[in-house]
Amino acid sequence: MINLFRKQWFFIGIALMVALAFLFPGLGLVIKEYKILNIGIFIAFLITGLTLDTRTVIEQLHNLRVLVASLVSSLVLIPVITFFLANLAFSNSPDLVIGSVIIAVAPVTVASGTVMTALALGNVPLSLFICVLSNFVALLTIPFLLKILLQFGQTINLPVYSILAGLSLTVLAPTVLGQLLRPRLKDAIFRYKKAFSIFSQCVVLLIIFNAVSASISEIIRSGIVIFLVFGFMIGLRILILTMNFTISRFIGLDQASTSAFTIHTSQKTLTVSYLVWAGYFASDFPMAMIPPIAFHLTQMLMDTILAHHFRKKALEKTQLVNADQVL
Image (tube, rainbow, N blue to C red; front, side, top):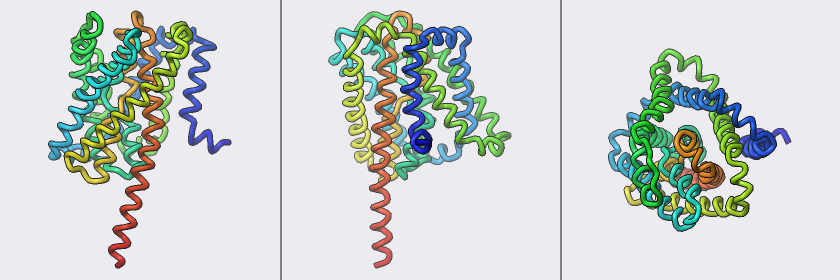
């Protein structure tokens, strides 16, 4: 039982957060009033800066085709595809369309993408490269993509430069601060690497609690629609993973780099999605945070399965190479 909790504590935590949100929705207001989640997000990105080894990222800069492909896929193709499919699936629910677009324009995840790549025995430096590149460029693209895409469905006045400034302050500033502090603290923080990862996941759990508690009445009224959202996200996830696997093959990546590109370029971060939703959409579109949560849960489950598949293929290839060397 203890081993099960250790392995699956995050998913157990998700169920617990959802239950607590329904039982004590008022706690969400307390979290918002005292900016508890904002502080947690700031610390999470500070930790990102402290633990990110940029030397391994710089080594990947010569690989121009991966640079271009990861940016185009993550920050152009995925948002556009998601926008059109969401409009087809949720034509009568602007909240769900907007929520789908919010998660689609977000950058890739910081921690889980690299963890999944390592599990898959993939190219971890390339995974880090995709992570850093996407997160910094997304700060510029998010407000403009939201404005362009959402104008097609409904008229929404977005303060583009205000969004850019807000994301820079909340995401970029603590990450840069962490990088500046890293040379002095890297030896001291190494022993806390696992604890930092757990803290970041706890921030995600708090985001889920806050989003659910803020939209309980809408969730209850939506009924079966919630299941349709998860069904949509499963189909979208399969499409995105297939697309990025095909791109990785088209640009000629090896097995390890294919694993990194397919997994990490396909992932999206719930943290940045929450910042956008809470800052500019929560009051008018309270259910718009449901698609990002559904995407995140689907991403965690499906990418774990995919990472194990890539790992199995990598081990089989290694065994074949060793066998050939013996012969």
